[in-house]
Length: 261
Ligand SMILES: NC(=O)c1ccc[n+]([C@@H]2O[C@H](COP(=O)([O-])OP(=O)(O)OC[C@H]3O[C@@H](n4cnc5c(N)ncnc54)[C@H](OP(=O)(O)O)[C@@H]3O)[C@@H](O)[C@H]2O)c1
Image (cartoon, rainbow, N blue to C red):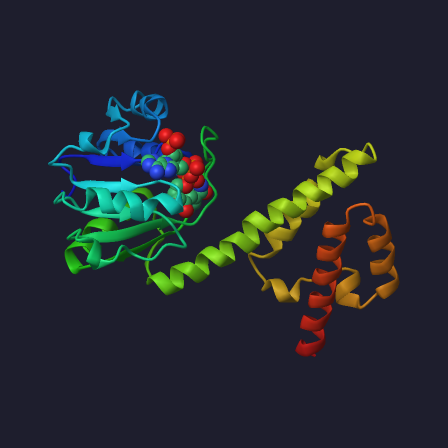
């Protein structure tokens, strides 16, 4: 209905790869993939019978939508270069506001999927929310239609809300994944397979389905057990920066529950 001439994707990284597959499964045509590296653009485009280029001039003039799936710091620069085209443009970043009207793109928007996407790692049966924002009512209808093609959880939020959503996503995904990495490293340095932690990790997330995380906290900091905290700090003595993070997190956590009393 809205995308008869197909969608042009700019970028060929983690998100471009997954959105392209999701759109194809929803029978939305992708006409062209454009990326900084022609080789990366070709690799993705070949999967969908799309054309490819490393040149923004190859954007089909009648494209129905330009979907920017590029690094956050490249969004403004690319938007500036395509401003003359009369094609609606949506970016996909959590932390970048909707493109300003001063950029002289008539219809702009955001289509932000809240999940972690890694190129070439196919998603399982996971359903994920998509957050949209649009410069005008027509663009909103288009993005809503598109988002519903690939998700049954579609929400409209503004740039300020999306920035906070992105921050929350960094806390629960990026930081916890880094903590998993450190925990695996610690175990593996003592010849214990890190996978032994998987039931603990899984149970921690499964319980969240029914309870607020603040009601699920356990461990030495929650109990105010300074002796155990000091013992852990000793174990981390050889990794002084991470030891500081451990101490800071433990004390912050203690304070949180003291205040909650
Ligand atoms: N990955 C996620 O889990 C996720 C989730 C939600 C939203 N997002 C958003 O999706 C966007 C892309 O993230 P990503 O994870 O897919 O990043 P990525 O894997 O690093 O891919 C970035 C892509 O941007 C292209 N690029 C970078 N600078 C460019 C420039 N100056 N001109 C043209 N192309 C340029 C790169 O091209 P080449 O490969 O050709 O060099 C690459 O294809 C970001 O805005 C991010 O916030 C990502």
